[in-house]
Length: 448
Ligand SMILES: Cc1cc2nc3c(=O)[nH]c(=O)nc-3n(C[C@H](O)[C@H](O)[C@H](O)COP(=O)(O)OP(=O)(O)OC[C@H]3O[C@@H](n4cnc5c(N)ncnc54)[C@H](O)[C@@H]3O)c2cc1C
Image (cartoon, rainbow, N blue to C red; front, side, top):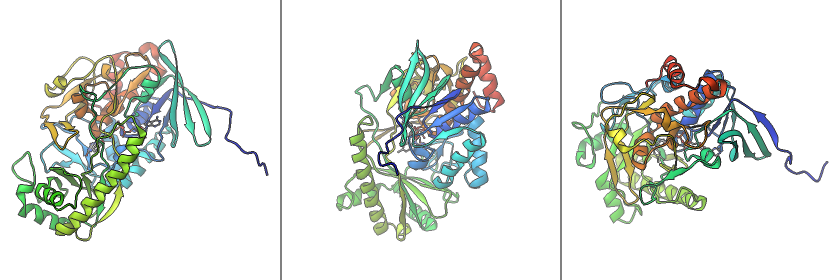
C-alpha cells in the first residue's frame, strides 16, 4: 500500500462551450437554456445540492410569475414548473393571501432539490457539485478558462462563455469586472436562515387568524381563509409578548409564515442578523445565531399558539444572503425602471415583485409593483468582460432595483436569458445580435 498518498498535483483539464458558475435557481435555468440551444454546458456548484436559497434556504414560496393583470414569467421557468408539478402536483401558482404579489408557487423543498437535479440531467448538463470557482483567466477582456477547487484537487475548464450565477458576481469579479454592493452607505440587507416546521395544525391556524385579525397584515380585503395555501404576514402581538417575556431575544415586528405543499408544514421567515456577506467568519456566526432565533421562536409558538402545540423543526436552512455583489453591467437597472414598468428595445425578460428591503434595524421598506417591468439584455452583460453574462441576484442593478430583481422567479427569467445569450455567444459569436437572442427566447416561450 502506498503510504505517501497525496492529492492529485496535476491540474485536470475539461472544456465546454458555456460554463455556468453557481447552481442556484438562476444557474439551473441558465444551464438548461444553454444546453437547449446546443451548447456543451458545464455547471459548477460549491454545495452538494442545486437550488441555492430555493432549496437550502428554504424559501416560503417561489414569487412571482404574474403582475396584477398578466403572466410575466414563462419560458424555461414555466417548463421547469411543469416538470416540478409532475413530481409535486400542488406546486402551481396560487393566490398570495397577503395580496403582496399576484400569485406565488408553494413547494416542497425536498422535491425541489430532486427536481432541479433531474431537470439538468435530462438536459444533459454536466454538473460538478462540491466544486468551488477559484480563478478566472482572461485574455483581452474575454474569459478563456476558469480554475476550480475540488476535494481531490484543481481542474481547469476552458470555455467560450460564462454565466455568472453565483449570487455575488464572483466570476465577473475574479475576471476583473467591477462589483457594486450595499446601499449608498455600503450596508447590505440582513441575512436570514428560514425554518421548515412540520406537524402544524392548519385548521387551528386558520382559526387563530380568524380570532386575531389585528395580528396580520394584508394588502387586500382580509385574508381568504378558504384558500388551500396560507401565506401569513404578522403575528405582531405574539412576537412582542415573547420578546417582553424574555422568551425571544430577537424583536421583529412581523414575520412571514407560508404553507408548503407538504401536509401540515410551514416555512417561517423570522431570523435576522446584520452580517457582512463578504466575511465568512460573520456568516458562520450568523448561522448559529439564526438557528438559535428559529428554535426560540418555535418553542414560543408551541407554548402560545395551539396550532403549533405538536410542531417540530424539519429543517433550519443555511444563512441566506439577500443581497451582496451586483455585477456592474452595460446598463444598471434602477428603482425608477422598476416602479415605472420600464420597457425598451433590447428586453430579455420581466419581473413584477415589489421592492422589498429588509432594513438593518427591525423595519422593512416595501413598494408594491402592480405592472411588470422589462429587463434589458445590457443588464446581463458585464461591463468589462465580453463573454460573461449575469444571471439571478447579481444582475446589474442599483440597491433598490435589486430588492425586486432578486426574487426567485425573476432570477429564473434572467437565468433563462443569460443562458441563451451565453450559448449564442459561444456557438456563433458573429451572430451575437439582439434579434437572434430575442428570437430564441421567444421560441422557448419567454416573455420579453
Ligand atoms: C432569507 C431569504 C428569503 C427569501 N424569500 C423568498 C421568497 O419567499 N420567495 C422568493 O421568490 N424569493 C425569496 N428570496 C429571494 C430568492 O430566493 C433569491 O434571491 C434567489 O433564489 C437567488 O437565486 P440565485 O440563483 O441568483 O442565487 P443563489 O440562490 O444564492 O445561488 C447561487 C449559487 O452559487 C453558488 N456559488 C456561489 N459562489 C460560488 C463559487 N465561488 N463556486 C461555486 N459555486 C458558488 C452558491 O453555493 C449558490 O448555490 C429570499 C432570499 C433570502 C435570502
